[in-house]
Length: 515
Length: 68
Image (cartoon, rainbow over all chains, first blue to last red):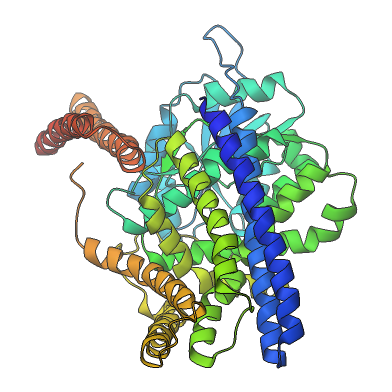
């Protein structure tokens, strides 16, 4: 049986079991509220229902993108021949106090790009005078153009590109972060696509972390990225709803100018600017060919910082655009749905907080999330859970990913839940966020205990809940009450995921890869 | 230093930079490939051994170039 057919069948089973579970949950929640005797229980029932529905909607969105990716995505394979005319491209590398040795490798890699008509421009946004002098000297030594972003500065990376945009003459710009080394074929593969389709505003290519050998966080973060770049982006591209991801992309200058340059008001200027381009009628494309390698977050602190910025920026933008996404005719229904799903994904922190707390609350305080016969629950939940797992792992197998890495990824996600929750609250209340760049020198061995307060409280509460639940179940002789072991199981599962990644980082401290 | 000597020094520096970039690119690509994707165990060890050989030779080259 062909893989796409297998995925389709598993997907259909997933939808069928999901539907059964949704019906079960609606009925049990309705009945639970009717027999509930306190407002706290009512709130608990409603919150848990909403959290589960959120997960269900995101899962269905993920499945639809997988389906589109497998059945409809076709990578464009146009490339230049040597005798063809090559339009000018400016390769922009924004820098901000980055170590010279990192920048040097990026410049050298860019200088070896196989394309006739391009120049490399370093956009220097460094804060220190001596750092600017060093970057300038490096540019002179390597014979690449140096552009000092003028004062007063604004808008971080977006502002730097916008300042350069005032002088720009080339029809295309490629953007690379200072630690992303482009491959030789980047321009030969991407420029013809913009040349042959004048409605295309930009092409985004994947981001792969090169330091995942030695950095534990980078490895788990890469798995998260892979799911995004392997399936979700292909699905988005088919619906003309691809967004910019900050680096490894080629942009049509005219398209960027048509929206007034990069959006400087958002900490995720790439996402925001892509939405503006789509609103203006530009088409967007994802080209699934790895054309650059960069460095992933070096430790948990850096990862938390990155995820906070992405969550705050993306959710904030989608919330501010929500009326337009729902009512404007400038977005198709499919595009609106994609952007709402992408932005609302970052509510995952609040949702997981509910899912993590509910079993604890039940075991410690006897407040249920809903009331039903545990046997019915198992009958309704188990098929849904199994098919969602089979579907997910099948998608990993198709592209030869190591399924065990999913545990690291899931553990990292759970550890980041408080960060996502803070980002969501800040986005909902429109609290100001500043652009914080990734620290390229951060120690990979650091465990940021000062940022793990909420996680530690959750770990302690989970242990307490498991102990108390076990006593209730075993000592008090409530053998028939299956609700207790079910909640102990969930507490244990969450506890395992919350501590696993901390141990994994701890164990890998100081270790170097063998290859 | 003569012009020829300066040019030679510059060429050596350039080769070191390129060798380091080669090492980086190799580590990046194979690191990502070996860590993310599944392989048969014997193929996996073959690839690791091959890459290790390339990396060792390149590191030796860089060491020698730095002595010039």
